[in-house]
Amino acid sequence: MRATLLYGADDVRVEDVADPKIQNPTDAVVRIVLSCICGSDLWPYKSAPSTDNPRHMGHEFLGVVEETGSAVAGVKPGDVVVAPFVYSDNTCAYCREGLQTSCAHGGTWGVNGVDGGQGQAARVPQADGTLVKLPVGEDSELLPDLLTLSDILCTGYHAARTAGVTRGDSVTVIGDGAVGLAAVISAKLLGAEQIILMGRHQVRTDLGRDFGATGVVAERGEEGIARVRELTGGEGTRKVLECVGLKDAIVQSFGVVRDGGTVSRVGAPQHSEVPFGFGDFMRNVTLTGGVAPARAYIDELMPHILTGSIRPGRVFDRTIGLEDIADGYRAMNDREALKVLVRP
Image (cartoon, rainbow, N blue to C red; front, side, top):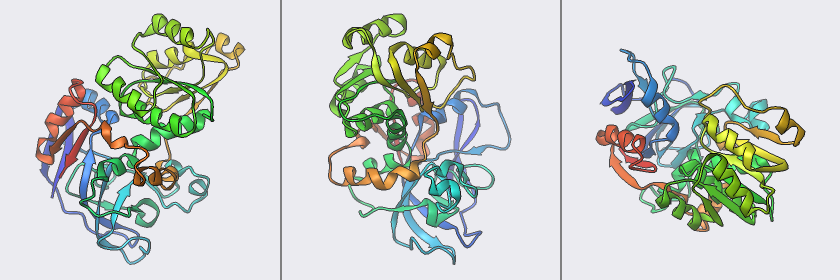
């Protein structure tokens, strides 16, 4: 089959790799119908050292089950399924607590002999715990929306849930990328009354308004903090959803949060230092967040997509074939595309 391999910074190639096969009784083989490029894929794309042992790329995909191992009972050949961005057995102690990202038998796509999601097919370990059957056909117009359940919608929702967003809340979302826009959707789903989106790309922030943002702040740094506080009577918002992963974004988050408020960070962190000093301690600010256990949220979020009450697939503003995926990476890296949909 054909699959996407990362050989180093700015070096993404589509090459022939071995077809996936059942290796364990708990495996399934899925023919991929839709996948996409994630913002977190851009970090290695911009910085990975050159190698002769390339990494299989992609962790967001949905498709059709082609084959199952002897121990798989939850899905069968012909089922249309979505895969979360990590695989898990969904039965271990961590999974039962809704923390599938820490599954004792789980792992990540594209490493240790596991296929990536940006290819024509994938072997799915722990298929019963990982794959979620979709009540649609493989030609459904809802597939782009349902694909967001693999990562970005659940990540935005994780930000809102861990921040404790409730009805009537005030929320600031830091970042107008796909996860930030999903956080806007999620804050609205949970009943937030005021949702301020901090972003500088008007096409994206206009989409954020459609998703439920009540205000947009394009300024950054101290100017941006002052603007948010102006919109909130000088206090800042009770909840802040940090969806970028850069140090400047977390600094800005602490600047716009209300005393006694909560900052949830779900942007994949590209820094190790967290500037949580004595001043924030004295303000009783809570810092939370982390990697989203997408599998824990899929069943909760899917009905909103099936009824059409949310359309998160609108974040996909470019569609390409698998052979053109290098251009998709370039377009996202150069901010020519918000999120690229890939049809193998």
